Image (cartoon, rainbow, N blue to C red; front, side, top):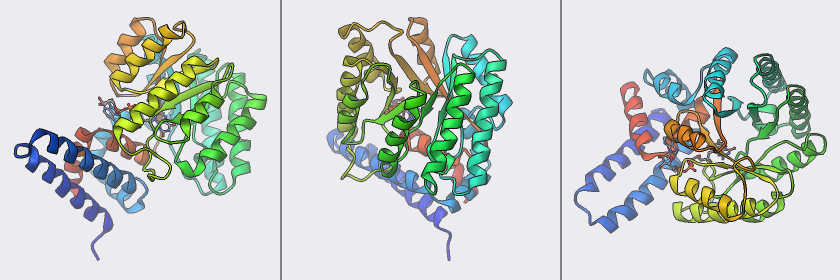
Length: 346
Ligand SMILES: Cc1cc2nc3c(=O)[nH]c(=O)nc-3n(C[C@H](O)[C@H](O)[C@H](O)COP(=O)(O)OP(=O)(O)OC[C@H]3O[C@@H](n4cnc5c(N)ncnc54)[C@H](O)[C@@H]3O)c2cc1C
């Protein structure tokens, strides 16, 4: 039987060829509609592949994958993470570090992830990189999907180490099946570590209400669009609806008393963030922009030079597959690059 992954890749490649084929022949409005629809389809295919272990094997061994990975990931070792952090911090940027890994189903793996964060936090402190650098943690990497209590306990240990190192933790948000348990965990962590950051995703229909609830004094909230394939019942599907929701959520956070962390590379949303800061009379130290390592670095610099706080999300480690696939799904141009790299292997 033919392996699933090449079929997925060939299906996606055929769809991409169809888009190119139509570019010159369709009226502009029709093409825009079809391109948008096909982009949503391609995104779903890539995000489905992000959960496939067969696809993971294929991508991990594809010759070009490593080059693509290095655009988005600092490296595999703690030293790589520290080196990149040092460069960014010396350049006036802030950092949040993510030790790559998700969906852990073994206690020893979850504990190994905890141990790496503890090592990292001690090194950040020793190198004088805190508080400019903090860490981002996925509860699924701490075993949330098979032992929720354990994941919160391990997260508490990471928060304690962060406090000792003079910095904070932000709990990344994953797909909608864990939104409630993740937000509950954050409420629990905040009882002892009030600086623990939450992440809310504007593609979820519930998020505007969550933003109002989380906009309380001292509450650090990262607002992003959301990176997973979600059903229409819980999430907006079109770019326009997701962007409109982002603006409503941004308004709720900027109007409130918390500390908004606007995580987006979208130029229009960055401008709206700047505008709302003026409107709600927020100084540049009462909120921050966040962007991913390797994406729009000149914009990160420009904003920092204009006096805004900018934090770069820096992932590192061996488990880069799921992270890379979500980045591939975000930008149509990345899909072409990615499919061509697979084509050489298939
Ligand atoms: C700091 C940070 C933390 C995040 N944490 C989470 C999280 O915890 N949970 C979660 O679900 N999602 C998270 N995300 C991902 C987020 O949800 C989006 O998937 C991602 O940021 C793309 O959305 P965008 O707002 O940049 O807008 P888009 O409309 O996707 O992109 C706007 C523009 O940015 C550029 N761009 C965006 N993505 C790429 C890319 N991959 N490669 C090259 N250029 C690109 C392009 O120029 C694009 O036109 C995080 C994002 C950031 C920046």
